Length: 393
Image 1 (cartoon, one colour):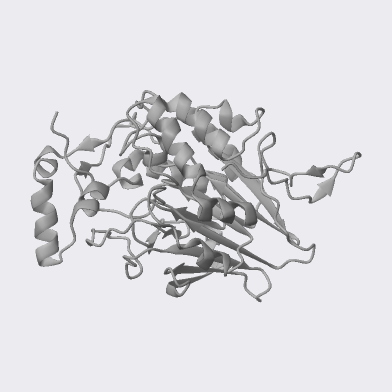
Image 2: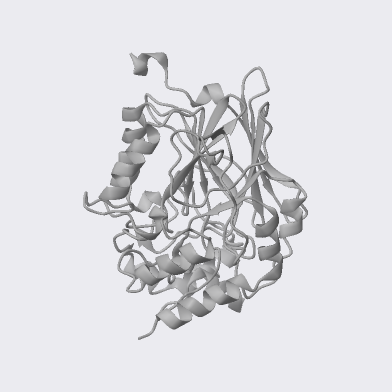
């Protein structure tokens, strides 16, 4: 069969680590650490070295790290001393057509010394995207997804009792105590239950021509997928939706939702929530139903960095900070009607500084190049991530 080249292939042509303990915020009778209320139990959670009087939290994030390429970016991330790093998917490139290849790619991932040294030094958590889940753009029909789940949990040190090993996907959540404030991190799984994508045959059959035209004109290049408006089209799966509703009801001052693909971006024709409009609308409605405030998104996948925003009538704006990639770059502009910044088409990582010490608590995003310099900045007042008083009545 004549397969069309993926974006990554076109660009190519033109841990095992010591397990981290749970951060102690309270102790049981035996003196063992216990999770903050609302955290999931039974899985490996990172220990954050925060004093009881902490007023700030720094979260670094990124995606798309090919284990076969040099990874010089880790020292630049370390130099910013993040309290936590969030791996947002494509943490390795398996692109596996069989189980043996999948296992071999994970072995290669665990042999990347600079990456594993970073993991040993830095508290971290992870979700997956298509390339480390299985293969390019695959979803719930990937035939080796149960083996992939096992390999993922092994590589990220999930204990045998972890729900990530046994539920229908590797979604999970954490709650971190920052002084008297609570920061919730929700990590979704957008692969294990995702229905197949809907290709635009006319665009996919002439993909090389689209690339050449974009290169010559500098105009945004729309992708080769169409939105699937069918109500049964799924990103999360019903069990994960029920879990997510429970998570959005957990008390928290700031909520961070990790999404392996962009949530707010629209009109691009590449993978993202806009290919599943009913699912995105369901999430917007769920936020309103649960009155979950202080929510922002972190996303990856696109091989560039940018800020996007989804304005919700009767709600508050949903910001989406995209950081990608750690080794991968896509230098052809793509459409995004929700874009709020320039595009950083270079190797990059993201920082989210949560500052509870200011008179108005702030969320400060920085999208940084390999030298650690912030190229894109976005400051968001926490009070702007609240429902209008009328919508609460």
